[in-house]
Image (cartoon, rainbow, N blue to C red):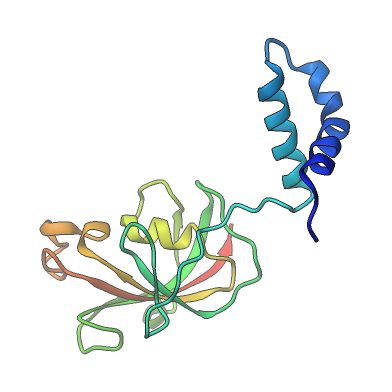
Length: 174
């Protein structure tokens, strides 16, 4: 369904009129911009999503940062906000998915891992990946070194400069 700009602005003015009286020292343009955005968002017209990007031959999407992911199971649509505590399952490899170089797995331990999304508690590639996943979603993610452990590596297990391969699942938002 397409709405004309005039209809959208008109609706924004009607819906946002109550807000107008509570805002002090705000110019007309700022008020109109906020009203249109608020109304459009409430009406479901504007959605904040990752930009649509074509997948490569293997079905992986590459983000601007260089993270690659492929959704292998869709979730229910609930995405964790920054700072939310999430429960996950994962398996990580060096070299490639299902290689002999598995370095860790919460699935093997049957013990989900929890962390706060977007707070730097985990490597940057995980913050980025889980910050756009929905509950129940499973992804394969490929994390370049600069979003992983960089040139320093980790714990004598992950060498410096390593690309990391993960099979991850967002089990829930706690």
